[in-house]
Each structure stands twice: as C-alpha cells, then as structure tokens.
Amino acid sequence: MGINKMLMRNKRGDKILSIYWFAILVLVAGGIFGMVYVFYGTPYDVREIEARVLMNQIADCISYAGRINTDLISDSQTTQKSGEDFLKDCHLNFKSSEWEDEQYYTEIDFYKLEDMDNAVLSINAGDNKWLSSCGLQEDKEQRNLPQCVRDSFYSLDNADNQYIIKILAVVRKTEKNVKL
Amino acid sequence: MKRGKGNRGQKSTYSSKAVGRLTIFLPKNRKGTILIENVIFIILNLVYLSILVLFLLKQGSGAIVLEQSYAKNIALLIDSSKPVMEMKLNMEDAMKLAEKNGIAKEDIVKINGNIVKVKLSAKGGYEYSFFNKVDVTVYPDVSPDKNYIIKINGYK
Image (cartoon, rainbow over all chains, first blue to last red; front, side, top):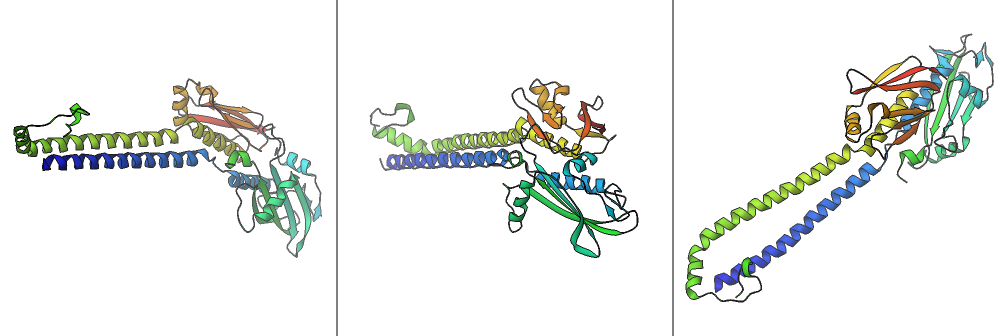
C-alpha cells in the first residue's frame, strides 16, 4: 500500500513537472518567434550609405583630380547654378515615381581658405524641408527622421586658388528603411 | 486504489499476492520505464529544437528578406557606378528561390525608370529607387549562371 501511495505521488509530481516543462517550451518558442519577427520585420536601413554615395557622386562632379569644375569656378569667378541645372549637369535625378516628394536634399558650399565664414558659392538641390531634421539629430540620432551626412574636402580652381568645399547630403526614404 | 494508465477511471483492488508480485518486479519495471520515458523525452526535445532551427533558417532565406536586400544592393550599386561599368552580382540563393517559386531568371530583376524591382515569388516583389541618371541593363549571366550582370550603358 505504502509503495503504491508513493507511486501515485510521483505520478502527480511528474504531471505537474510536465505541465511546467510544456509551459517553458511554449515560452521559449514564443520568445524566439517574437525575436525573429522583430528582427526580420525591420527593414535594412541603407540611407546613410546612400547619402555617402550621393556625396561622392557630387564630389566627383564638382571637382575632378583635385580641380574644381570650371563650369562652377573659373579664375576665381563663380557661376551660380540652380538646383535643377546642377542636378542635370551632375546626372542626378531626385524625382521618382515611387515617391510623391523628392526624397533627397543636398547643399554644397565653396569657401576660400582665407575666409571660412562666407561661402563664395552655394548650391542646393532637392527638397529643403528635410534640412530641419539635420539639426534635430545633432544631439541624438533619430531613425525616423531623414539621415544627414556632412563632409568637406580641399580643391583648387584653374588659377590655383584654394577652396574648401563642404557638402551636406540628406536622404529621407523613411518608410522603406525604418519600421514605423 | 486506482489502476495505472490502462484502466483510468475504473476502480479495482489488487490482491495482497499481486502487491507482493509488484514489489518483487518493481526494480525491473522501473528501469524499463525510465529508459523509454527518457528516450521519448530526448526525441521530443530534439524534434522541438530542430523545428526552431528550421524556422530560423527559413526566415533568414525567405523571399521577403532576399528581395529587399537585393533591391537595395542593386540600387546602391547603380548609384555608385559610372558609365560603361559592368558589374556582376552573385545571386545564387535568390535564383534558387525564384526557380522554386516558378519565377524565370530573366524576371528576377527589372529596372523601370529609376526603380529597381526584385521579384522572387509570384505574389511578392520589392522596389527601391536610385538617383544616378544612367541607362542600365540587367540580365542573368550565362556562365556561371549564378550571377546577374548590371551594365551601365551611359548617362540618360
């Protein structure tokens, strides 16, 4: 009788243990499914790379082999260009049927080495409403806002005058790169 | 006293002789039970783990993930390219998946204006735009047939 009682108690213990085991399996599976869903459900964010590629293309367009494009600065004489003309000359197309608004913005400033406060030539193209997000991201990066990339380089004009060229490239495309 | 698994719910009593026999044969029975239970437990755990691993592998090589990754990859390649460039992109896994889903090799990557579209399943498809104003041709390579060729013909 005593043995049978012990057997019964053990069986009950096994049952309780198996319920807990089953609960643990469900929890682990649920956790993994959740993590996988979040991981693969989040799009790849390529906006920073895209902005860098845009910046490189612009840099190649305005200065080649260390010399500024003579269409922009020649013998210290600058030629102001509209955004559309600049994009056309640099073979860039910011419009797309995929988006209602332009998803890019760029700003190029040419400074003489002697005067770094006043730009001798400024060109901007694209939708300037994305520019405001760059200031907001200075302290903390906000993934939901357009991504901004800034860089500068040194170049010479055809009269060997020295310039610092600062480029800002902004890419929005939030819906395609961030889970909202 | 209740009986074991076989007669659940039915009430019956064991004779003192039977209890004696049970006590005698208990060590043998217990060994047998432990072995079978453990084997089943291990097999079930292995089945559970393999299902989880298969799920993870399938998710990683799914059409949705690959379509997005290749569309963005191709768009960025076109963005950073210059005329007369010819690029070869290894798309072996995408081609295998497309073949499995009944999509022809030629239909995997399409370029419409300045939008790249990658399609690996009948229902799916992912689009991503590029800013470089170039004339692009894309087609699958003949040998080796795992590559896709992206050819930049010139500026538009």
